[in-house]
Image (tube, rainbow, N blue to C red; front, side, top):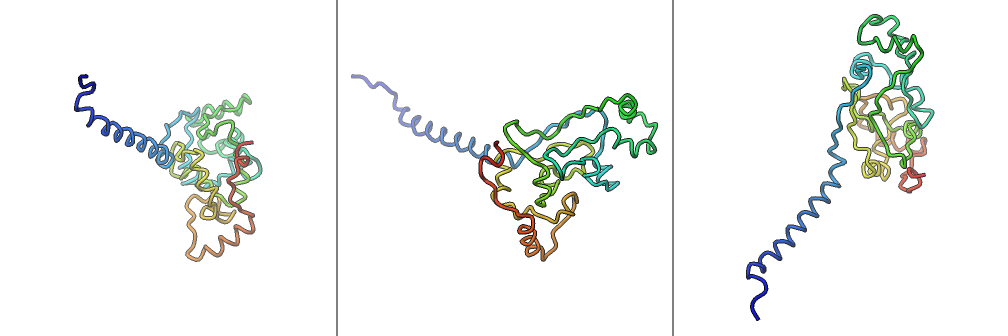
Length: 212
């Protein structure tokens, strides 16, 4: 009986196995590292609102606009009236704010484009995190440096679980939660442990914590 496979098959077989193993390894590495190197598109908004100007330059606290962030699951989208508290006097005739003035006049709210999305099957409570001492910057990045807000964290399950397994390093005093540039003092480890006990911070890895 003649030879069925050419002699080169002796080389092709092990090479194919090596290639498959490398491809599987590359895919696994991508799935692991992708959440750490996340980049999201810049989304258009009805009005050009700069967090860099309002938060970074003017020092407006996050809770002035996101009024329910420490009291409810949803952080709250600022109403037109919140904008007009300042802009009825400041830049009151600027063309860039025409839609804001129209909204105030006709009573129809502005429809902002949502930047940070979680799937419907994932439950997230802003107030639970804020009141445990988790800072806005932890999940939203340095918004005080963003002329246009973009999503800088993947918000994937693996990213969330990194913190849920060991939340301690992310805890800070509640009065510093909205401070974009707060840095822990050198002797903060002992204080942090006290805060963890005071805020009842625990590792939460049960599926039902986020999937309800």
